[in-house]
Length: 512
Image (cartoon, rainbow, N blue to C red; front, top):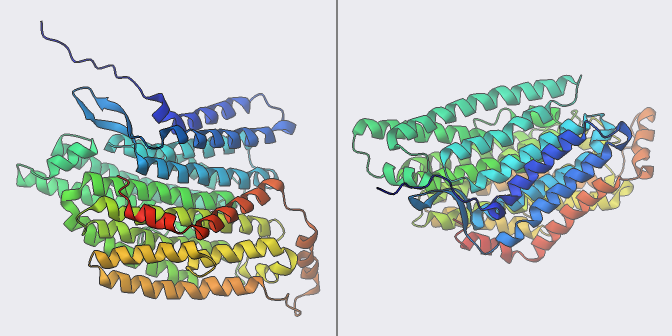
């Protein structure tokens, strides 16, 4: 009698611990919300924060290993879940970003009267999907993880009931994301039809030798459509149009979450499908991503440059357009991977830049959340004289903006940009390096302009009725969770600036 290949697989629960634990805490919070009285609802926030801390700590036992699970019985090297160095770094970024978002959210939920249980359930569910995505090594798991990360985010954006801006932002975000997902699913179906597999390693092997020219055409269409879907998730131009309105309409912690964790999801997925799934099509996606990078950084920085400091929500809009410009820089090493002999080394620069960007951008949103407590319109002009009212907050925001600009004392921002620039030059993309240099100069203007506003004196020509609002922040106490989030982001940014060799280590190492 012939032996039967067993279909029941052993599961490596330790490798699965970070996303699984985050999802489990989300379910616990949702059930607990039914029984916890209204006066004790804030406990759900601390439970969620503790869950994210515990999920992050479970990354420590995975360091130095390459654990795999959900593998094909006959091919143990073909797996759906891989906890390699790339996975762990992105999971650290995602869970760390979600943790800072949780600290920002504790007082925002109370101030804006948001539904507590639903908020924490949605945030943890999105974080669980975002933590699953970098470990996904087949197209089905990749798409599922992407949607688990995205669908709760739609609801979080529109959670401010009765707010027109919030509802409009959620609807725009939802409709455009659904369209992008439909395009990506069509591309995945084409790839499955052409290659007969969903595992990235097998797709890569099959794409190198398709027997029928018609299958090659189908595969090319699948590659292009899949890239379009991920281009939307990364807010790459021209798929960026949802960003400014979504960030303005969302609660500020969720805007910061989308700018960091949402981008980490999009870029990690894009790296996996290009470097591991489509290496034989590098001559197609390499030039396409290079053009997208140039277009994205230019559109983002020029739009940020045009923001009126006295327009309502101009601070959030500037951060939104700035995040689009930063997405262009993050795309450069991925585009360079299409020209490199060893693509795995090139994408290290994107990961290093993403770590720097996550810390300082969430820090900037944290200070914006602080200012919004007394100036709900959150204009850039509302930050005038912030140093006189909140010297530590002003110094922190100034440091974050200088890191994003790549100027001392934000050494980590300078090193990250130089690393990305050198990757483009080494790949022979001199024209892209020149466009990046021009955009860095453009960005210097609006980052420095906002920084100088922090240290100017208050305008004497203001209307008398606005003066108390300007004086109030000096007396208001900063909530402890918000102060902790600003302090953590500042300490992390200073630590990275004090050890910029960490960027070089990531940029020179092969994470995949």
